[in-house]
Image (cartoon, rainbow, N blue to C red; front, top):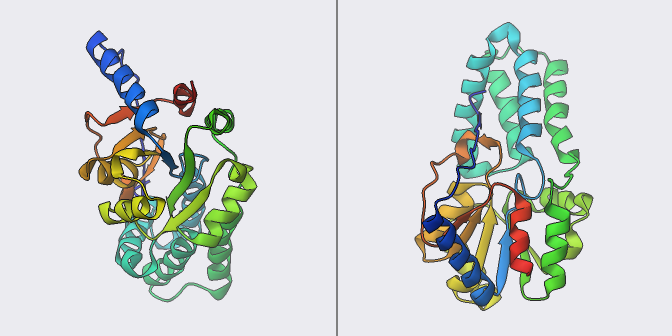
Length: 259
């Protein structure tokens, strides 16, 4: 699919020097972190694969007007053009699905098929938000440790994200939920101001290097990258090493912060 990328992250054997560096970083986190902020989609639960499934069905519905590669490519263009006004989330995605369908069909698509497309997009409002492996027990351990305030800091639509958090059963672990239109260095500075902490007292955890990691590192903050196997193309960015960054292959590795 053109609008999502399947990425294999190979957990390479760490050199003794890298292992020592990571251990020192974890000790820094445990000593200085006051707030741990977590991304939601594809960090706490699987989201992108559900979008991918809807897009696959969408391409099948529009097959009279083009193959999968063409339909996905045109959808990506439509989403990109709409992003400044519509932002992120399944409602924005559904509007782009409908608009793109009218465009690629040159207005010949039937009302019945448009309603089917709308319902396919709307189904994303009901995705299960089942916690990814290790998430529930790790959040519980971090909460029980009593050392950190824990917040959700994620992009999207407030009602949708809050509903997913409730369905996930994870709401009780968090002191605060912030849903923003985007994540830039300014948004992270504002989060720290609202929490009355300095940037080096915030630890950001997320799967998207572009949204969760790079903006935090850019302003001197600290982050833990937990990559997910499916990445929306808009969120893709090549990861790099940084002295303020720890990369974990699975969420449960964060359990070390509770010790």
